Length: 446
Ligand code: URA
Ligand code: CA
Image (cartoon, rainbow, N blue to C red; front, side, top):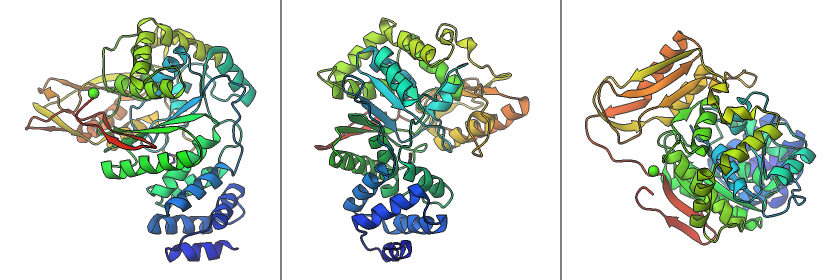
């Protein structure tokens, strides 16, 4: 079997065998064939697709291309959560401490920012001293002792994805359903949890912009997860506007702390975090229903148990837990400037990807792989889609490195938020729940 023969087959839209797919995944992991041949096959897959069977075989071959984490030393059912990526999406920092405070172990490996989307590891590293690089032994010991750890990948998990993802990023082959399914699920299956809750985003800030594509992605991930023997639930949730109001690393940590401290009565970030966490507690056997799980988490906010759990996690990972009592101990930007709407009307639309890119350009994300982040920068949106605004209504507060950066960010945020002259309804947080039993569409805003 040669790589050239495999490329030739997929070029003509033929189905690859399990052996051919395994050859490809191992070649990517071991880098035994040149990048140009891997890239050629990626483009052939992007253009001609894969059958369900091929997608499953690719996912499992990528999972098996490296180590599989063994979390069996941690008692209880370990439920993992994964989001396909968004802007202002700080659910992990909200739900991990809450779920742990409700008695389910949270052993989570997270990622860094990618393109316009933020990453949990970057957000955590904005907390002074906090370390996200733990050995497997320390990771497991921490979860056994305090019930929660959020770290970078330990060991060599799904190395095939590492190679293929970096090639996809630069060969215009990211937006391929079989390649997204296999990339995300190979990593999640290798991370060793007992069950998985997926948050598949849809809208202007998501990897899939239309509901139909997002539903298809969710259905495929659930199908492959079930075939791999994992209980799995996927929510399809909205990314038509940033999920939280805060965008930027330290700002998003502050928002998570505000929520855990009970300083927020509602909001979409809290709502989505409670919903995902409710499913986690249910799958972990700690709640009779997902709704009961949500109630437990609300109580953990009211009692302060969730914030206490975050403090314990920060301290265990070498960080300064006093940021939970005094959020001004987080990195603070030099320039803090309000921006006003300038016209009256209704907020009708947001280009969420453009908002993510604006934060990235301010220094909250990397433009090149070795860029250093500025943890303090970003912005706090003061409006949501559907809001009635006047010229002097605050649009956002910018946190920037310099006046010049703030000027550029102001122009970018203005361009990304549409203020129209017709009233406009609120957008939904949730569109569907996908389980092995099928798709349940959700109606109006939940
Ligand atoms: N996130 C991943 O890890 N992989 C993808 O392909 C898309 C999003
Ligand atoms: Ca809502």
